[in-house]
Image 1 (cartoon, rainbow, N blue to C red):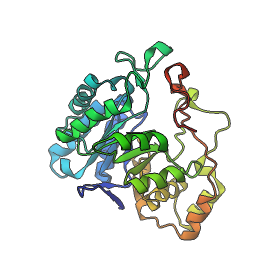
Image 2: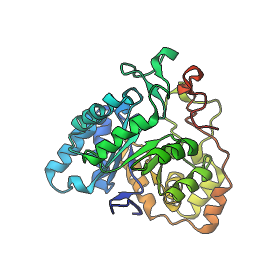
Image 3: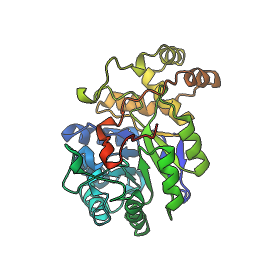
Image 4: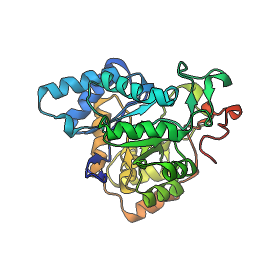
Amino acid sequence: MKTLEFENKDRMHAIGLGTWKATGNDVKKAVKNALEIGIRHIDTAAAYGNESEIGEALAEVFEEGKIRREDVFITSKLWNNAHQERSVLPALQESLKKLQLDYLDLYLIHWPVAFKANVNQPSSPSDYLSLEEVPIIETWRKMEEAKENRLVRHIGVSNFSKEKLNDLISKATHKPEMNQVELHPLLQQDELLNFCKKEGVFMTAYSPLGSGDRSKNMKGEDEPNLMELDTIKEIAKKNNATPAQVLISWHAHRGCGVIPKSTSKDHIELNFRAADLSLSEKELEQISKLDKHYRFITGKFFEEPSKGYENIYDE
């Protein structure tokens, strides 16, 4: 398994388990199955509403004694309604409580967007706080405090553009160590990836298979199917692999983490086995030609010009 090594020599498996949209007993079983199969990288977030079930799964597995806490890399994320200085550490403590952990391996600012404290999803402009009211660096200072207090081992961001990330790096004491964004062959984000590599910031890909199971109101018309792309299917056939394995392996070849979501034990195992797939330079070149800068997660659901959120991704 390829790994990403942080400055302090901590390692994160490139291929992990994503849990967005996985809830209840399904996500609990998925986590236990993933750990049994060999996955050692679990990704969740406060907004996913599944930290408690994941915490139950982790506690039961660790209690068995075959897998230790320090063997598993666990990520969660700060939701948009906890960006204010007074809210960051309590939100983290709530996530730790639900996950039944003493620390997180990685904690991310989920979006560069702030809501009022009592708002889970905004319904009007008044539900937002502008970046003048809650600057990202104010939130980040508390993330840094969490790291200094060893509540988290690493800190980073999610859905940050090159511009937003560069601005944060220029002001931070501890620079972000991760930027988790949508990445796949139709959205390769080479400029952002090159910038992150130059700055020593890792990237993790979410929705690497296209997130086909998300709600209809988040979908566009005539969305492409990543696993039906001719190039991907041809490479999969040539390597006796599945299209999903090609898509997952591609991220590891680029030096990125990747968190495909599944609750099916068979699919989780196939996703994990993508680590064994070696793509040739020719195949990587073929995939590089697929980029269309197509987003499945447009971010438009959080755009609110009156509060300064005209374009989440600055493009």
